[in-house]
Image (cartoon, rainbow, N blue to C red; front, top):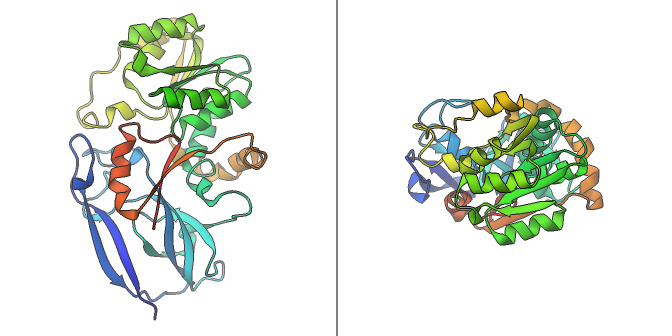
Length: 339
């Protein structure tokens, strides 16, 4: 029987505002698993870090009950099979699954999916060919309903989801305005072909940003990843029959989950413009992953779509990497490589 050194990050304290290492505990132990029928032992290679994890740490119910304390932090993982008692998996296979912040795990074969490294970089299973890609594709195409020539505004446009929405909107023949939090990120957006890249930190108020958006012709589709001041400006810059897709509100997650700030009083704007607002969750489209991959995978192979990630090396940096999401430290998808 093989023995392994197991490392796990346990979520042990609920944050009131900013999340950090003090809300986690690193535990190490010897691990000598015995596999039952159809079980697989995997070693984590790449672990996902996502803003939704902070939503799960709210004290109140969101789309599901709060993440329980004293349990391993949940997360999507790309792993390698070490041992298998399942005919569908062999040692050395690359797989993905919701395995959490741990170096090793025993999972049932139904909990993981095989990754073909010949199709694309295995890390894309945590990004463009995973949850962020699914969110971006169906959020834009199903809820946003973009039409060629329309203006699509994307907040958090240099993030994991936003950078993909931006590229999908360009592919759909739209005029795209991307909003990000640094000049470096705006320059990257320009290389992808956005028509305008705006650094929101250059605008001292929602009114200033609104003025700029109206100068640019207003907004037909607003893909909202951040909330806050940017959304205040966007909602007062909508064109007739605009669509607003609410994907995330990252500006509100630290301290605003259980006692949220008073929201923008924008209902009259929706009335004037006969606009619609729809919230979207990736899980609503899980059963349609094959449909998304059919559209997107060929673009990855030809280099027509860029998948960018910020990769942090070191299992010990997982909590710090999560905290960094709320300080804008990542460009594209945040991934921790287990070394």
